[in-house]
Length: 384
Image (cartoon, rainbow, N blue to C red; front, side):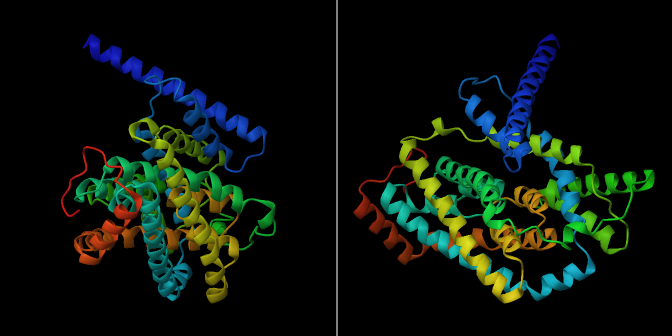
């Protein structure tokens, strides 16, 4: 018992230290006027300080999960009956955008595999812009895929999107992109009451728990989105959350992101870092180009279209959409569609793809032109 109490105190001390560093990072970024400072500041501070305080920093995933619930509520308030009708109208565009970015990521993966000598199937799995946790699990299940490389590419992509997309979206280039009359204003005019507080607290927490039980992707985010949306569509008023609560949620997310990246886990990380950065940047540029098409097809404001198609997590893009006054409903719809498409369609497709004769030919082409593969001992030789 004494040992357990001591371990508990040590964990609390490490969490407190992590929180202090994260909050300081957010405060410093706020002083410099950096967009999304309460999320980017903690992530940058812990990413830099973490290498000097190895083993002394700790941020449980449970805190991150709790922070996703109020963010899920905020995104869910943008869903109305009219939004659902518009989602149905834009469903072909959602499918086309998702398929195109997946095809583009495959093309980039082939080039990166040839250049870096990293096994193609590991690069392909690591470059898919899906949910981080789902892609990491998939990387562990597929034969011939190095889970460490998948983790590295996915985390680097996410970090690149988290830092670059806000700087692009909130830059002077989009100075005219503050969009009035968006879905973010659905709760305007409503005020909190004791009944509403308890209603939404119970519904969002219960939705998160149920989502986790039924293995919903990113359950602590999607569950509250679905639960809140159901109440809003039923006519229940959904007031805005207090700004300090969302700031705390951003700090919790930023702290988690800052401690995710551990470059020392991968050999020859210099080339892998550059390859992951190039891949993430290529996906961002492709999203920027695709946003012009979405704007032309459906009249969606460009800023909203860019955030909706950005290859990041729905939680980060949802926060960005709120900060940029973009249409939360459109951003949430496109990001959610991509998550479910990748969850349901991509795993069986990848398994068939890796077994296809033409894919093995591309693998041999990459190895022949790039030299010997940069494989870890954990990679299986099957199929190569």
